Image 1 (tube, protein in one colour):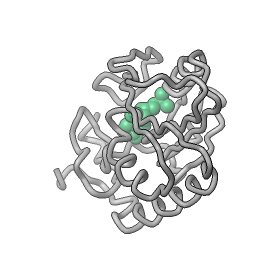
Image 2 (cartoon, protein in one colour):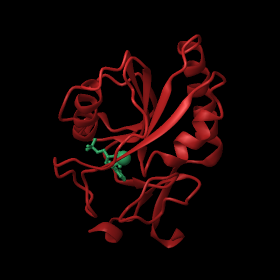
Image 3 (spheres, protein in one colour):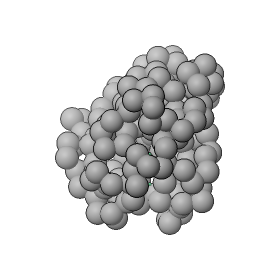
Length: 178
Ligand code: IMP
Ligand code: MG
């Protein structure tokens, strides 16, 4: 696994500090509410697990699994729900937790779909953001790090289902995905 890594971009320590900071902000902003925190599978799973332990208000966790990428590194624009939410979000305060926002197409689809279920509010938290790659305009409420246009893996994020278990965020050598 390590031989495929080009460079470590965010170490475990740096990620931990950022997750603490996001958890604090979310705790303040959602105080008095009991939100449903929706993790977008599978990439956001590791981030969500750490994040919710830094949010000190009552909350419910749910997951949705959407796919747009298949096994390639480029979005197909086609989004499919593989696993839907377990709970109704009607009249609830929602926090969507994502790993990366790239083109924004996945999130645009997801937002439209979730809004049609009439939640009270929807906010978005993404660990990583690649603003250069955005193809649709989406307001993201909480962003961990803005990164340049480079393919990254680790901390839950995969390439062809591999590297999710790396504890840090790293770029991959190009020959791995070319
Ligand atoms: P979007 O629809 O283009 O915004 O794609 C969002 C999804 O693509 C993310 O939630 C990730 O699962 C995946 N993705 C985007 N960039 C990367 C990357 O650099 N590495 C791994 N997965 C990525
Ligand atoms: Mg994802």
